Length: 112
Length: 115
Image (cartoon, rainbow over all chains, first blue to last red):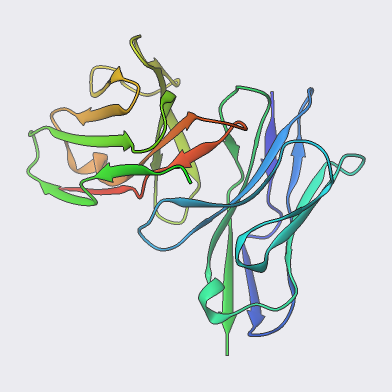
């Protein structure tokens, strides 16, 4: 079985400040890891994914994440956030061709 | 990149009627489609998984006779909410897996309101 824990339900931050959204996972097998963003009343958009190779993954909109196998973490970071980054962020895990398992989500609130 | 088109984006229906939601993969063949339900301020709950040409596999607690899933082709899957009731009001999202690199592509979601 696999699971995802997003430690923060809400992260408030000022515009142009750095941000880190935390994600920890558990799985008995090798995993693929994903971060998705959801804007109100919309579907999920893939920010980035880790399948294999380099543990530092760069995604869209200036986001990046680092896969840390020893700490079973896949934290999402952005060095300088914009108002438009305000959204819900979901971390997800799958193993091979299994279904995606999602965390509960973290609401990123960027204020001026 | 891969695109999944989901329609309608929002629908209001009367209690007791049925509603069909469509998801189409536009530029790739979706070997597997997933249907999720999302309650306000909550994560996505997997309802069912369907492979093209075979019966869907429903998650525990999801009524297969109420939520009918059809995946008749590699580019189209439909979810029909039968005899809808107000408690079925929710945000429904489809996801397609196909193409390269274990990619999951999501539709834009359907806001269903049953009155």
